[in-house]
Length: 202
Ligand code: ADP
Ligand code: MG
Image 1 (tube, rainbow, N blue to C red):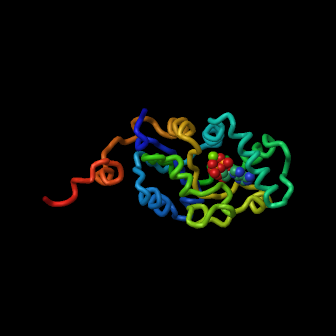
Image 2 (image 1 turned 90 degrees about the horizontal axis):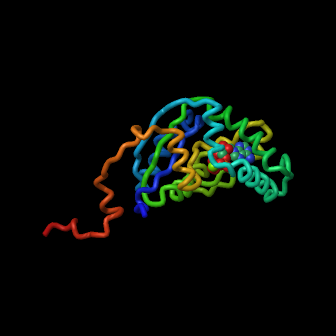
Image 3 (image 1 turned 45 degrees about the vertical axis):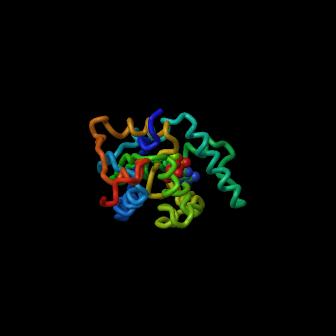
């Protein structure tokens, strides 16, 4: 089995993150926790590429629709439809408009439990419900009722892979193998090495 420290996740700073000059702040949080940056680029994307990205997981349409419906119900509000696929069709159209609106910054972070750690730091999808201390909780005001009223996607700064298998497929979708850099970082010894006897002068 591969060592947990080799896990990778895909993060994309979305157009609102770039426009609000939060790329550095977002990256700092992943650096601070000990993850290693192994690929990064600034680019623009197309509606087709965005649709493919979100539907790499065949379950995404159902899950996203169900998540949105239950979030309405938790707030005591009526969802736009009871059919998760209908709910997601509208979300996906709005998402495509959002993601092509400006430059984005896809990147790959590597380290132990990279997928879970990044999702924890990013916070939940709807910023109104994201915990304080998370990136979405700290930097975004958006909510489902507001984005629905305005007929747009939730602006929540970042995409982050939801599982290691999703990450693997998404990484292939955004990066060529030669764009990913393999290197050793000096600080990794204190993060991962089982030995701690290298630090005191004899
Ligand atoms: P996450 O980005 O947290 O993994 P999802 O995969 O469920 O969230 O959805 C992808 C993106 O679609 C979200 O980050 C958000 O920008 C947008 N989105 C999801 N659900 C809704 C919704 N109910 N209304 C508006 N936009 C949404
Ligand atoms: Mg997702």
